[in-house]
Length: 196
Image 1: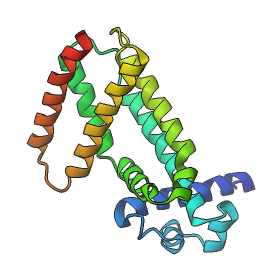
Image 2 (image 1 turned 60 degrees about the vertical axis):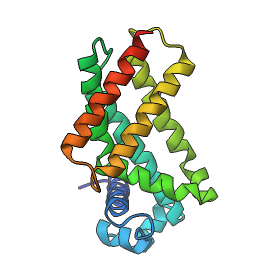
Image 3 (image 1 turned 45 degrees about the vertical axis):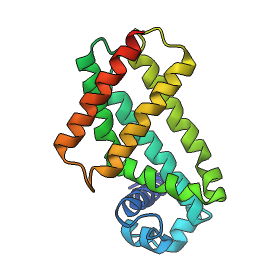
């Protein structure tokens, strides 16, 4: 029989999973506390015992997404990169991660936070944690190159922007061939920069 602490953790996990799924499928506007509770199979009272507001459960879901994506990035993307072919493989993995339900959830929250100062403030810790993981992973990927931290950060921002753009476009307009061609082109553009 689970302890009270285990039941609490299970309820929170169900609420976060339900929030992530709702954000992915119904978007920010369609992710109400009632919708989350229905998906999680818990009452709204249970949600509000663990989270003081809708914004708080959204921020907790963002932190969970950042944790999951960070783990997936660390597990699936290994470095250091030593060839353009390896770079292309890493970029393809990043596009796959970028197109995941978790990352679509991240995009939903980031777009909502663009015009919601309070949500942006709630998401800030998760955003900073996520970027730390990405920067650490990027440093490991490009460890064999003489990149100063400012240039590494700029390069990572370019990669994230391309990956995010592809992730948003994939279900709408891009075929698998389009994505593969974009990844090939990005690797071809980046490789000479890494060699400098």
